[in-house]
Image (tube, rainbow, N blue to C red; front, top):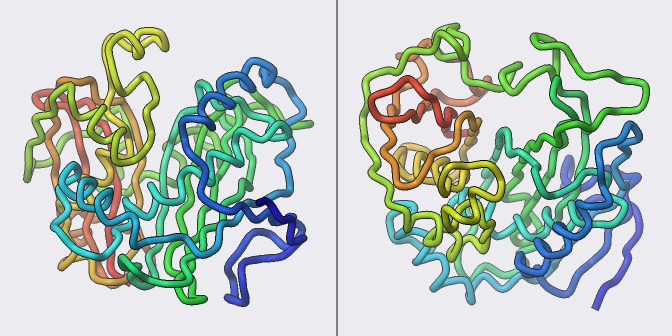
Length: 341
């Protein structure tokens, strides 16, 4: 069943929900990613780069999401990313829960950007209260907003919010890049200007060093990732994009062999920080650079933000920054921050 509920936000939570001008369509359940990817692949053929990008004023919502039934999947997810066993849904798992709804927005016929070739640039997440297995009244809403110029195309934010018992519990903003597209009347942004590159205003400021001059800090962990990590994370997340599953699938998109999911590496870094240090309410950011080829080895450094000279999450009570890079080389894969609220 699908019901259109008209414009407006989510519930009565102040500051939450899609923009007031958006029409919210209610779905009976969270969609399956497999079918969405098939639609996205077909639809991408018609969505060739053009100069008339306009986002649809539309959002999707699913109410009464059954969290009890996610127990086995949550346990498997925790094993894959290294989270301790718990009935609390971490920010990484909440992203997984909401991701199909955000993908449904991106495969709409009136969504102007093609799903194939979309590059995941960064994530910014706020967890305001814990969501646990068995919680009633869990509601997920997703929409797209803030299309803006990038030196290589157009970047757009996919926003997902999760309510529990009528309270906003989670808000995640995933930023993607569609190469080759432009905005009406706007050329590609220049490097160094807002929206000009993946670096502008998004990377944690860990010493003022730019991307080219970045020097790895002392590692605090090393991940040895086998070629099975792509299928393993794909099974718990539902994201079975061929570039993560096999060398054959990856080569079709220009990669020498399969690559790890960016959100797997970010979720594993979040798990390395751990529940005790991030608290029940926290902010989590991740920015993605070079993909991790599988099999491969990644060094990780987690540091106090104050020790790293970072100013990453203004208003938070301290926190941690993390960097991940290829073992033995200054090839940066990801960076981010975790801070309690």
